[in-house]
Image 1 (cartoon, helix red, strand yellow):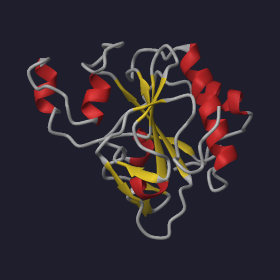
Image 2 (spheres, rainbow, N blue to C red):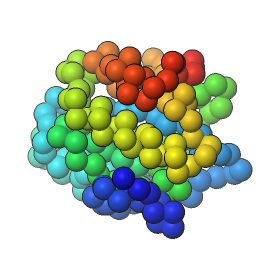
Image 3 (cartoon, rainbow, N blue to C red):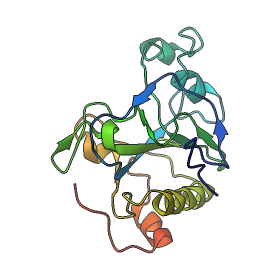
Length: 189
């Protein structure tokens, strides 16, 4: 697994460009990784609705839930499906719109300095072993490619937007990920 330095794309990912991205602002270093979960409709897997959401093509009439979210303009850098397939929507050097109103260690606007990774899942349904394996490999690749990223600076959406977001949820096994990455702990938020 490698990242193309020029394009900012992961070689093992299927790239689908999202219009929901822009240039990173200011002099902030990209030094945080934020983990999320998503499934559309909620708790349904294996459809292509996440790609439709991230490319602004989600049809409001395809599911009752979609009417409430089809106007959102959101994206993430990566999406890891339950079978381990990886999709990339935003090059890593660009700002993805995944965090919303957020704060990490007194720095607001986490989109400016983070990489967002979505896992196909929910707060309540256990993630698949292959998702952890692929995620760990992606994280190792990101840390090896971008010197400002550290394995200890991985957090959940719930930690940067407490009270507003709950993902990756209680079903996410942080201990398992820490073991796979051979680290003691993540930095507290």
